[in-house]
Amino acid sequence: MVTPLGASRAVTPAVGAVRQFLSGVGLLVRGLGLYARNPKLVLLGIVPALITGTLFLAGFVGLIYVVSDLAGWLTPFADDWSTGWRDLFRLVAAFAILGVAGLIGVLTFTAVTLLIGDPFYEKISERVEERCGGVPDQVDVPFWRSLRHSLADSVRLIALSVLIGIPLFVAGFLPVLGQTVVPVLGALFGGWILALELVGAPFYRRGRRLPDRRRALRANRPTALGFGVAVFCCFLIPLGAVLIMPAAVAGAALLARRSLGLPIDPPPPGTAPASTAPASTAPLGSAPVGSAPARPEDGAGRQDMAEVEVEER
Image: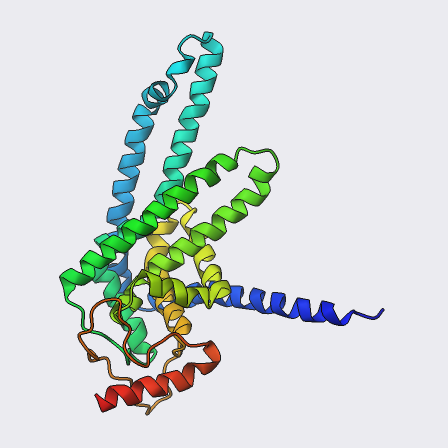
């Protein structure tokens, strides 16, 4: 059987995308390994996730306690229905409220945990980058300015999560499509949002903000989706968000380095690490010269250029 020439050309990009997707999953596995091998990082990373998990759990339990009253308040038009139909409809409404709350909780858990545990996760991310050769294009950003911009970016991502997440949840009730296509779309969307959130620390370290993250990850979309979807699926497991969150931060540092064309493996013995001293005090969002996102195949050359510029400064 002769395979058409166009068919082989069409298959190659698809195979490459699958490989990149799996490599993104592998970044989470590598992050888990880096995190698990350091007991100090285990204790450092699990505290903020436990605090956030406790707050979210308390809020969800409180919602369960009042959900029947909330369902009645949202459906006043059902007051005149027969008792059986009214109770059934409000039971469905109560489950829908809990479902939407759970979905929003999954999508916002990362942003809230990153805000609560910013100093802890910043240390984890720094150690991962130091292990891989340092940050040659680091920018010194004042703490309060960085915190303000981080909060603003997190609010934008949370708003986008709610804006897209609720329609996806409602679409889940559609026959057939709601049980097949919608869960896949939800995982892809949730994974993309999580990837954008988790790479925040490495990008802020370089003076870059949310638009820069979008551009860099968009150029490596299959890898970013592989990483994000893997994290999203782990977060759906009970206590998965608490246990995986620190490993996801470590893996996100690797994802950010790969998206910026930097190595994600430790340098060979005897190789001088890149300087991690602040390259400048440029405003947050202005990328240092020579640190623009690069294709993976250009990573070594871009890193050499960044190192030469840091030395010249």
